[in-house]
Length: 136
Image (tube, rainbow, N blue to C red; front, side, top):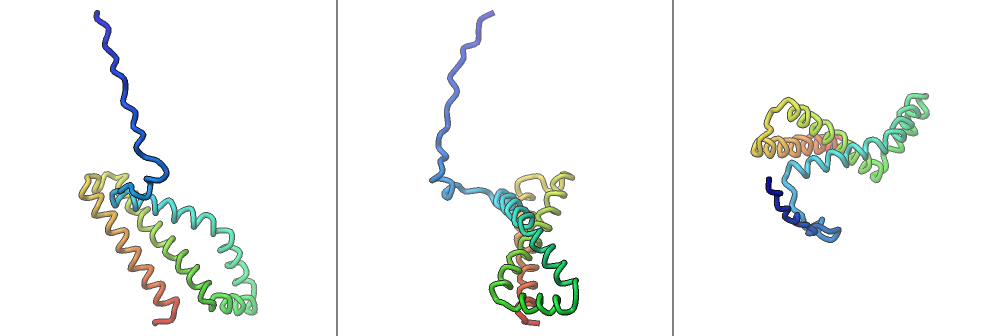
């Protein structure tokens, strides 16, 4: 038998650190990265949130102190970011569960579900923001 001629494999060195900002991900890829970022944010903030929950449930005095702490606009923005993180992570998690059951695995369906995750989580976050800043 004749030996197969081995062709040299091409080397692709076209993505460097400086080109990451220029790289265009599809919408589903952006949702995947945001899902990971929101999960990391929730994981990092979990001990602090559990501490605040513990302090708010201790007594009426600590609950009033907690309400005063949440009246600060900077704290409200932090709570809003954590709310977005939870809403987005929840909606994207449902999307990934649907993808695991082979629902909307094709390119167009994946794009539509990614867009729906962005829209639904944004609407839920806007509702939380309106309630948090006293619109209703």
